[in-house]
Length: 356
Image (cartoon, rainbow, N blue to C red; front, side, top):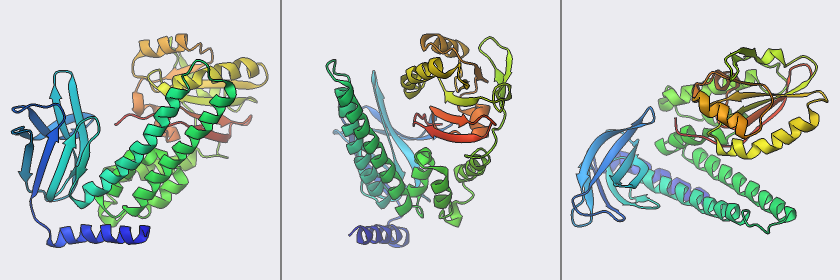
């Protein structure tokens, strides 16, 4: 049945490109909006919105009409007072129906139907995860119950990853798959990512983000398990020069902790590192923190509040951190454990990412 549905979706995409209309019409509503309010189609460039078109709400609805030469990802945005609503969608020729509110619903063209179905699946899993997170805050929860819930969360995270990979794989020849690959690649291990990238059609191979991902795969191989560490040179919180080689490859196990003070999962995980460091620092174990912060004060405050006592380095370049480039880091917290000889023994990550 899944195969039949997939073939039908692909046939719909082909039919639209060959025989469908050559204009688009977007008809939508915004929860809580009033007549006379404005809605915008916007592009996102360097983390900033850029207005493409505007429409005024009349009789409770807004309408955009135009012609689109190719399918592109864009945003519908609405701002009024403290209310800020936005949702990304695929701008393509055809009739698009849009509801913007606490959760968006955007359907009507093949790309948007596929994307909307993907979001619905992800939201369903997110709702389950949020319910578990909330239940873990109960004051009377015991350790056994907490561990059970952690396992449930892990299973749901794996479910999300499967949804992402499956949807990308099924749509790798169209703009939806390419967009999801760019947006969610950090859920995919590099070995699998390399296989998916090999399936990208020729017309997308020179896309800037696809080229970047190919470069990341190549970089990741150079610092993968079994490879000797790549050195890093940055500054400590008090401005002194420090290198990873000051600690790595000198007879100790060294944990490289890629983190940031603004990263929620990093802060949640830090008590475990503090405990491990206290227990093993005198037994041949060292930690070197590499911060993705961009504000020196925030970084220093984070170190103090989180009781971090091990060596720290940063170039305060956020996601352009040299550590991210050399170790192909796509999400944090990310840790790499080096053996006594400075070789990558193992690594693991938690997904904390902001849109670049």
